[in-house]
Length: 255
Image 1 (cartoon, rainbow, N blue to C red):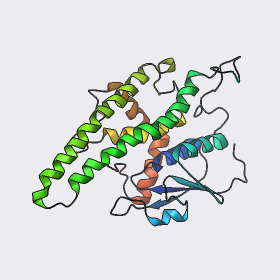
Image 2 (cartoon, helix red, strand yellow):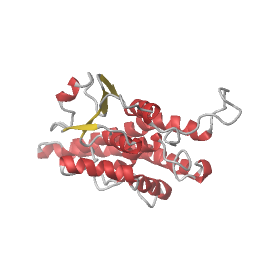
Image 3 (cartoon, rainbow, N blue to C red):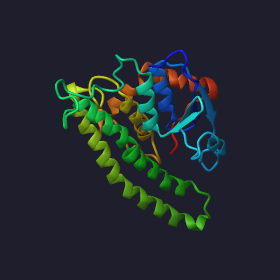
């Protein structure tokens, strides 16, 4: 838990980025913080100002005092470790009673929590980022006589990604069906930091991209319901309201 001498926390928030999840987490933790917002360049890259905060110019980045930290999962784990109330469920109980420190002694809730912290960034977000490529090809200013070629390339790339979306979204649909205690969250009955990280790729996947939404209610009813449940968290709504108050709007769609 933080004490009265906790250094100032600043979230370096970039539009259309994963940084919104850290803002939501800060709201869940109910710790004081400041927001500094940044706009993407026309290329959709982060502005060079972010490299003054962290050498990689990444967002999300938080600064606590003089220390800058990047990477969503690392930030989430760090903030939960230092600022989560002892009664908080953002990090599930790690050990089954009587199995402390033993191999395979971890609870199912905690194993899922750790898995999804890595899965979200290592697998699901990678797939969504690749989906940006064919859309970029289609939207690029191209001479009319080359458009049939670029459109064909974009279509072939999209068809390459479709099986990946079906595999991952189908996997998550089944995971929700087997969540401990019946869910409704991926790790069980309570919201965790992993659910907060999962929110952004699912919200983007719900949005129509070139006339098609990878995540739709008909094909993935439980996953759709889960994504809607995450949106309804009061702290998530407060985080969006804060950005609207600062920026005038909130649009998560980087694709």
